[in-house]
Image (tube, rainbow, N blue to C red; front, side):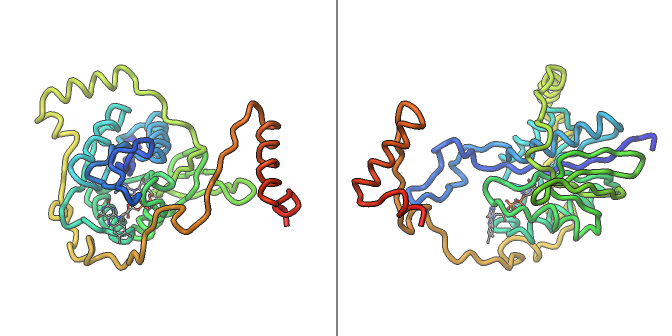
Length: 281
Ligand SMILES: Cc1cc2nc3c(=O)[nH]c(=O)nc-3n(C[C@H](O)[C@H](O)[C@H](O)COP(=O)(O)OP(=O)(O)OC[C@H]3O[C@@H](n4cnc5c(N)ncnc54)[C@H](O)[C@@H]3O)c2cc1C
């Protein structure tokens, strides 16, 4: 395989959970106002993509689906060393559930063609379903490994270890394959000066940048608009509510040391007429 691997990594832009900006009074996220960031789980996927290219050569294509500002996560992926980025952005994608999202991303990967490896994060910090990767693998008829911690490639064979209840499972599969990467895998390494400089130079010339990071829509990838957006999404969200609304309060006891905090808790329980025995029942 002289040209190395064709690697896709899926990266989603999510609301920045450490920022209060963009949170509505009812606790829901105002996506337009929220500060945004690269989904932290996708950094582990990007690292696996970089390691695979380092060891076997080839090209890394980062893909994101989202509104136009999501192009930022692709630019960031290039700063980390990805070769190309595609942002699938189309108004008709609004209100897509995971079935529709997986369809749209699958069509994008199919449009790129000839892919050996697809890396995704384990889950996102907003949707949090962990369904997208496995659904794409199913649609593409690809072998898949979820919760992957380590992997080694020899020829077309991947040997991977994945997290299961109480331990690790070792699996062997053939490329092409889709790998969802656990957040206990290797952390994303720092951006190198060379990559950041390369990106800055590229960004000076919008035409050159467009050649590397490009926005595409459903028509470009030949996707069926009836299978995305609200019309293509069978999921119905019945109700959402703010955590804590269902009752219960939380009181935090802050003391000089754990023993002191335990004393404060025991004192409060006693004052409330409850002992430890009551609590442990
Ligand atoms: C009824 C309904 C309506 C919705 N409407 C909207 C909406 O209008 N706008 C909106 O933003 N979201 C909307 N969502 C959420 C959206 O469907 C999910 O964010 C999306 O399907 C991905 O699921 P997830 O976030 O749970 O990803 P997971 O399955 O947890 O993600 C796993 C991995 O898949 C990859 N991945 C997931 N999503 C993307 C992406 N977009 N781009 C690139 N890689 C990705 C990443 O590598 C990620 O780590 C809606 C959900 C429902 C149920």
